Image (tube, rainbow, N blue to C red; front, side, top):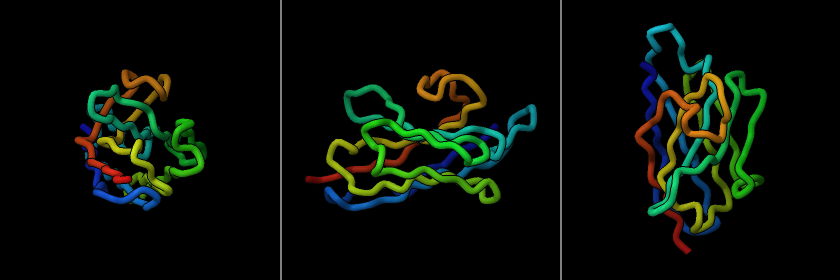
Length: 128
C-alpha cells in the first residue's frame, strides 16, 4: 500500500503563511507508486464535510484549485522525493481545518470516492 504522511500544520495568525508537506512511501500490490498518482489536498473543518482544496497531476504539469484558495495556495510535487507540498499564503480564519492529502488514479478530482489512499491529516489553525 501507499502510505501518506502530512506535516507542517500549526497555529498562525491571519495573513501568515504555512507550507504543508505530504510524503509518500510504499507501493500498491499492482506496483503503483507515488509518482504515478494524481494527488490532491482536501480539508475538513469541525462540523463540516471534507472539501477539495487543490490537485496536481502525476507529472506536475497541471494544477487545479478551489475558488476559495485560488491565488493564495500553490500545490507542487517532487516525484524523486515522493513529496507534495501546499504553500498557503494570506491565510484566513476560514482556512482553519485538518488538511489531508490523497492519491487518485482516475475519476473526478472533486469526488472523495475517486481517491485511493489518504493521510492522517495535519491541523491548521488560523487566528484572527
